[in-house]
Picture 1: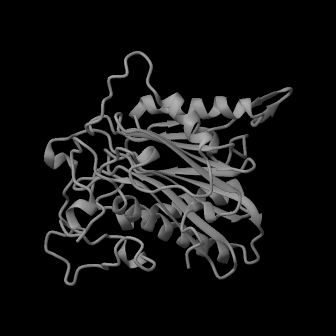
Picture 2 (picture 1 turned 30 degrees about the horizontal axis):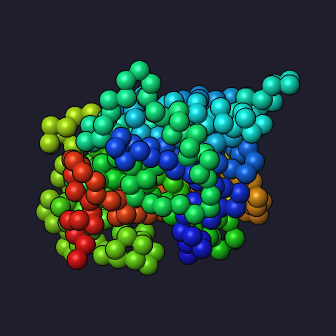
Picture 3 (picture 1 turned 90 degrees about the vertical axis):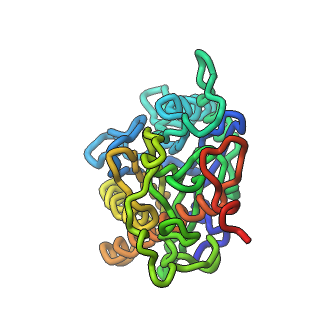
Length: 334
């Protein structure tokens, strides 16, 4: 079953903050642990945009991070991580090097520069300020859809958005996912209202429609943003989290397994033009009793939560002037 909020913040010790600019049609999202947390990452897309990612590999020295940032703006959006880092330094958080503290803030960005928003920011892109604002907005409850890093996100046929979901396992471990959906492909089955993630849906969290029966002939046709001559970078950037105690190597495996959820919810996925990336975070509140057996269950839950979060991000997207594609709600809601 999902946690009480059905958000990644059901994982004890986590908060999320969002900031966006409606005219810009872009924004930033911060995932903030109460204390520095073990994090690793898996990148399966061919066009990622990142900051402070190499240190998340298991063999690297720094074993915990202070926050994770997801942002729009393509490479300009990497400034959001710097904004969060500066604000955390003011708060006295960071990796201790003698008397100095350096906040560790891995960041991933998506391409939303052609979504109809005003990107004429001149010499200074606004993402540093958006990152700081997102950090100042952190809390356990947050909106889904066209907010934060998902403010201007799109898919091949519908507007994307920020999604989240959670699940509480039988052993008491909580798993959650947070995602900004900006995919080259589609989250729906062909041109229908049905989501590819439907087999994982809990209740009616994204419409309760299930899969179409039978599948339409065009369901597995490869239809992408390129069909509309809107070539460019596309990225679904996500984080999964758990309160289980994990090593950095186990967090790496969790990130790899979570990508299955991305592939279950988007078609096609992991293309040369997607920057598909998943962070995996452990807040270390609950010890595992069954080792590898528990890890299998946590990884499967992370994948299902990510699939659900992707569908929820698309489902809750809100229309705005000059959107290049419709929202799910405007096209299918009756």
